[in-house]
Structures are given as structure tokens and as C-alpha cells.
Length: 122
Image 1 (tube, one colour):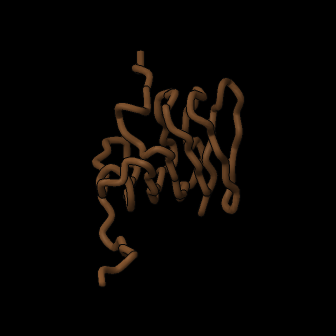
Image 2 (cartoon, rainbow, N blue to C red):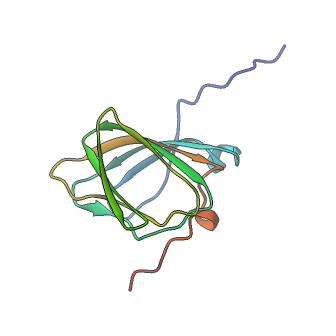
């Protein structure tokens, strides 16, 4: 009888050039295109360009703070708080604070560069 579960002990470390750690436990890297679950650590001063993803994204803050710019509104979440940002929202993630931010991100369907729709930095 085959097991009806899988344990992920070796997440895929997504290459980055901005100092952010992305460990994808489940997602396209594991053949799961319907969901991605990633552990992330964003260093102080980190930010990404605006994007309008074709997926819902849930974020649970574990440590520190993270800033969300969502359709022009600024929200700051702290450890123990979570947020759902629905697909199609124009969002920019950043950590303008003095300490790193550790969090879990869950995307439905899975995160992919084809679905994230990042804006070019001008």
C-alpha cells in the first residue's frame, strides 16, 4: 500500500539577487501547479516591483514586519497577523524596517513568473 502523504524536508531554494530567501516547499518546483507554499525571509530594506498576480496570495508573518501596498493603500503587518490579497490586485511588497521579516506565503494557484505580472522598473 502506498503512503497517502509526503514529507518535504528539502525545499527548493529559489535563486534571488535581492538578498531575500525563498524556500518553496510545495509548488511548481514539486509538480504542484494548484498551490505553492514558501518560507521566506526578507532582509531590512528589501522591496519588489509592483505586480498584479493571476493568483490569490496568503501571507502569514512569523517574525518582524512587512509592508503591503495594495491598490494604492499601505498596510503593515506584524508577527501573528495574516492577509489575503486577491488575484488581480496591484501589489508591492517591501520591508522598509530595521529588522528582517520572516513569513509564509501561500499562492492559489501556484506562484509562477508567467502568472505574477511584475511591472518593469523604469
